[in-house]
Length: 188
Image (cartoon, rainbow, N blue to C red; front, top):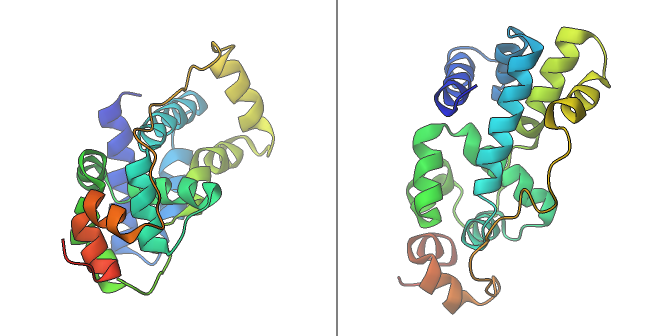
């Protein structure tokens, strides 16, 4: 599955969720469960790639501001939530996490420290779809090990950029001026 096909799956699930009462994560599982197991594994591979690409300090800082803090686990959920926003928003956030200051849900919940954009269940769509197709809860893990084979050590090493203190409001305002202004009330 190439990157365009990956985003088509996300967009189709978003369209289904928007036109029904089905939550996005369930619509995504349904979209994937209509595909062969090999395509579900390929989707999972693309998901990991785009998810890993957001594993950066500046993105984590945005999650920290929006959530009023952000643990390792919560950061996984935040990155899944950014993916769930679709390609357009994903690309904007990847280019500049500060652009989240323009996202309607972030604006609506500014300063409330809501978990808007933190979407844990999106992380598990591929495994849940695989289970739906095979009827076996362990099948995805077994298939994933075979699909990925042995990868070299540090295969997923990511340059996170420069680390900085998320609790330093002036540093957050310098690095994420619009988002800090929105959430902290600081002047960009």
